[in-house]
Structure formats: C-alpha cells, structure tokens
Length: 139
Image (tube, rainbow, N blue to C red):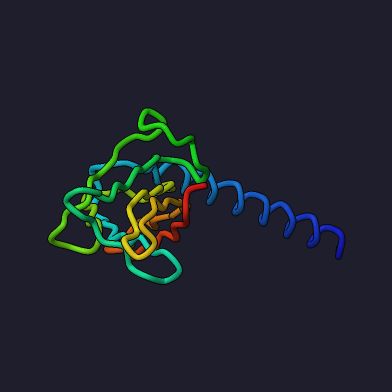
C-alpha cells in the first residue's frame, strides 16, 4: 500500500513539473507586443553612466536567450541608442520571457569605453522591471 502511494505521488509530481514547464515556455516568448517594460541603467562600479552627445550609450537586446550571443550588432534582435536627456533606457511593450541585455558606453571619469551584459527574465505580469547592467573597462 505504501509503495502504491509513493508511486502515485511521484507520478503526480512528474506530471505537474512537466506540464508547468511546457506552459511557461509556450506562453512566454520574449519579444515585443506585450504589456511589460524595462527601465535599464548602465553602472560602472555602482556609478551611473549617462549618454553623451559625442559618446552615446547603446543597449543591445537578444530575445529568448540567457547568454551573450556575440558582440556584433547582427548578433542581437534589437538595439537602442541612449538619450542625453535621461540616465536610463526605457523599453516598453515587452512580452514575458528571457532576454540578454548588453550595454556599451563611455565612462567620463576614466575616459574609457565600458561594456557588459546580464540575462533578465520577465514574468508574465511583471509590469515595469528595473535592471542595472554592470559594465567594465574594455581591454
């Protein structure tokens, strides 16, 4: 009898885990057309990096990825150029899903280019997500 309960419990656990994984991956496909948004900041050693007219910050986004796809513009699905009137990127209309964000900018305090990336997962009804991308010197 105990063996029957264990087998039933294990079977139910497997069914729940496999159906919940399928539902999430099927329903959450990163990209545009959703109701979520990201407010993205580039930070070098906790210092906020802001866009300059002569050195615009750039944010590259790869949909449905947790890994850096490469560093060529063609490796990403979209990109945004920083606005000198604000200290962040505001990306609206996103679906839930996995995104890889990669930022490149100019740090005036060290007069060097900085870059870096981070994976981000947006849940189905996340609303607005705030993301800090750590960037570092290019060697």
